[in-house]
Image (cartoon, rainbow over all chains, first blue to last red; front, side, top):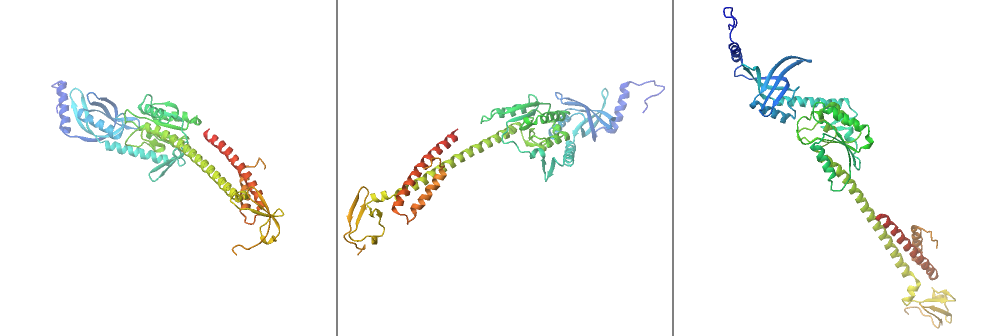
Length: 387
Length: 62
């Protein structure tokens, strides 16, 4: 290629660029390449379904390789798919594996067009990070986190829920669906239970979210005697960016927290690490429901005890009354007056009751006592019964 | 009869007398006396039971 020739001082820029273009085309045209790279300067244009970004490589903090890249409309769908599958925002700092095409434009220069993302790579990487965090939690906090089979046992989960839950510390995002759903469910509980909810409003998404949530937990811990439970809820809006809930420091604090924590982070696919360290419910509404049911259970137990007590008292008095009635009947039947009324009589001799007729001689004067009168008579004859 | 007798004490006295009445060898003149004692205790127990039940029901209602 003759680019500069002394006899020809210069060529037109466009011709020169065409030469470059030809060179590039000769090597790369029609081919695509899989590369693994970090992304930065992500600039999405959702209305046009384009996305500009830079692909970079670092050694420590120094960028050692960098190239401009772009998603055009066909590739843009992969960004959406990536976010859906990994629950991660496609944003600066991520490492991805993608298939690129080398493009060159006379005006815009060299760019890599990304035509596909291998989100399985990112998923695998995220899962590996998650596993690493979980292993570290178990290893570094033997008193607070234990893995038995596939189940994580934590100090926080071992704390019993109070018999009645009334004072709630709520960690949630401002004006969020989660906040609204949780409070609505509590207020509209069908049993008329009253709750006291203190709200600890914080950002729940974003790079610093775990620090903010942690800060709120420490605030609650400082006044722990004021609360029965802590509820961490988020809901509605994007299902992306749950990274804060996989953070080691936050998970560690949750696992060792002295008040029972209920989470309603509201994501259908993955369970976050914070969820594993606390009592996990699917949604903010369900967290509220668990609290209501806990109180309902208590009320039921009290009512049942009251019923049992009333029943026992009834039985006790009925038995006592029946017993007395029985004794009364027996005493009445044993009363000599009752016997006399039936036609029996008492025979006395010298005012002593006669039980043995052998003690009475013929000619003796005896008294025969009936119910209402006593007859005085003289014995004229004695004869054995039946003869 | 002592008026500060508890229900249980009165009842156990009553049961004791009933046992004596049940005894075949009891003399008729003793029997009359025992029946009188028993009747008195029955009245006492009935009154006591009514009072206790009233109190307990009041507490349950409260």
